[in-house]
Length: 193
Image (cartoon, rainbow, N blue to C red):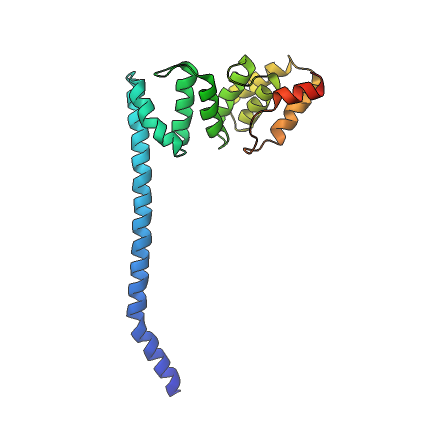
């Protein structure tokens, strides 16, 4: 019994140091979380500064603000850079760059970017074009709840053969962000379209 009492006394004596260690650890975690939140807030503030610049027509400043954010993976900055390159707002119009930025954010499930990719592929803008890829991107955006994508997908299906629609549906079902590109050209040739 005496042994149990000594053990209890040692534990009780050790509690302040354990408590201090827990407090120090919790403080470190909290400050790290706060630093992470502050970092996220500063990223969001920077993005909003870019939005303010774009809204007043200062696209060069918006681009300068959004480019590093986009390179770090900020989805809204990536989408907005895609918009700038697609429209030529403050940058030379460059459909390949628009495709690049839209694809970056589309791979994260951003429905608006998936829709924009569908539009670009349908209209033949950028490096690669075709109805199969357009249908696939519209279908993915529609699955994310983007209603205009479902409308475009269904209209496009009316212009495609049944085999093309089936293939495009399969592409959408098996889509992975690991796809290096949309394989329209190879698929079209191999399927005889």
